[in-house]
Image 1 (cartoon, rainbow, N blue to C red):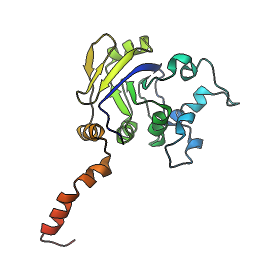
Image 2: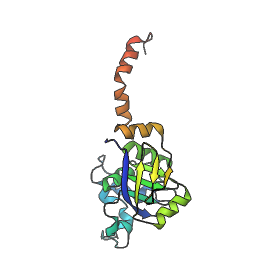
Image 3: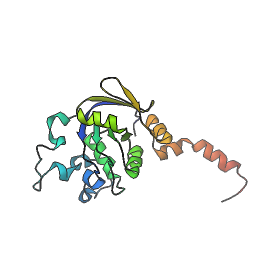
Image 4: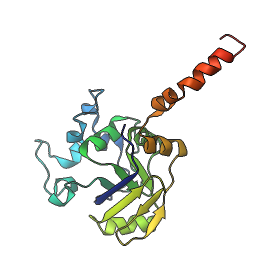
Length: 194
């Protein structure tokens, strides 16, 4: 995993409440353990009709959505099943962060473990973002702040351990592996045998 300090991007807005993980990536695409290629199926049943053709007025199919790395979702984003494929698909599509007033806990944890930044903001900031799609924002992991286009900044909560891992480009296993010398020292010095 690469280290993540700041993300600066335009936003794309999907203000629908209760977007669940099956809407993010439908279950029929969960036939792989690889993250690669899942982005093509992100929001598949919302983006495409029954023939597989793009629905022109769906936000991700519009030209202004191209290159946006920050998705502003509605309340209770990522609810539903615990599939890790949901953040994988969003990342593979090109999103680096999701902003909402409420992000489902399991989705939030899966996102943090995979490098997708869940940013929870209050209703006022959320409304500003929804009313102004395409504005440029900066998400700073170090300072835990979201800075809007006008320069105003708000803090957002992020788990301290997850923040450490994101800033250092490691996952939980990588963190444990960094502790190998201390683990080996403990094992050599302990007076009991498991």
